[in-house]
Length: 558
Figure (cartoon, rainbow, N blue to C red):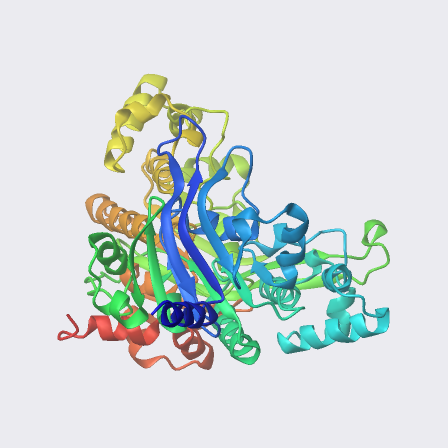
């Protein structure tokens, strides 16, 4: 009887490469809750992709850092539980042993490669460092392996990439270099912490496909951390859902996504934007803003400070033509570098143009100097992408919102009254007036940014990726808020995004940009149902979880 039990136990252990048992990670005294990770247990098998999903603060990343022995001590500390890797409890391992494990046996791909990579070391040197630390190979063989790794992750011209610094690569290329480093020694476990969050949809699709291919090739168990259920639908074998440090649901991907049991899981899946465009509103063909043949060129290199480098020119906007009608939302979509954010900054005159016209109610804003532009500033306002960087951390929320109206001549008393009114409009308590930005969550900060823009009574709102940095449920709340405010105030909106799922829910018409040019325009429904340009078709095909989103939209899918 005992022999059979031991045999079964041995078989079960062999089928798991990593097992987390009753893990508790303690938060500092005075935190909102006692544990960042509380009683978490799950297993990871070889060749399996387990996705851990949840909102910011759910504990999913700290669980991964506990596995790697990278908790931010002394403030956040392991308290109890087991982290069993191939029969060894890593929770009891020494720091010397963990240095052997990290990179050699368990590797991690971090969310932001620009902060994870050493900015003063070439990519080849950083890969070489990983190999050299764990293995005693000759320098020539280490270089050959590094080149092979860069080729495996489908980076163009591996020899050039080896000699490049991180800042010389695109976001997608940096993430591929991180994957090459993580896979250098063929680890048994790969932890991917939001590795595609900051990437464009087409690059994201390539990275997901690459991770699956390399995982199958090396029999690696992958722990994939994300808040994007579209990514989960594309890549996961099993899913674990975390809320406030606890696992609330775990199971096969089909069951969790299509038949969720826990209310929190249901709320998360319901908040994912669908790919079915919203019902179009009747837009009167009455232009409020016309962009005609807009040109904006960035120049770098050459001259005294070009250090001998040849001068470079990038046409960020190349003869762009778009029209925004009264009470309409125009979406500008495209990948990073397509020129969409440059177009937004030109419209609000944060950037000077090199040619073309921006006609607002018959006036060409491009011809106005700073003084002449001042009366128009309040009419076109912008909501920025990063709610952390766009608010002054040293100013109270009240001062942030009232500053614009006061500068433009409004009395301080009236500006303060208007600010409190705007805080209520965006769903924040009026008591927020006296608080500072760091006291608010990301979604709340984005609401403050929106209140700041609305305080000036604009006719046009330019929203530059306003929800890309937010969790899916907070994203849904902000999108609903924008739709409500637009309807109540009859605003016209230019909405910049790279997420076509978001565009489907927000925009009446869409202009698709690529390499500074508008390659296709049309109503949202027309573009989603009958895109004609190959680039638009590529963007639609690359949407994560496209098939899952389509199935959710079918009437009988419920």
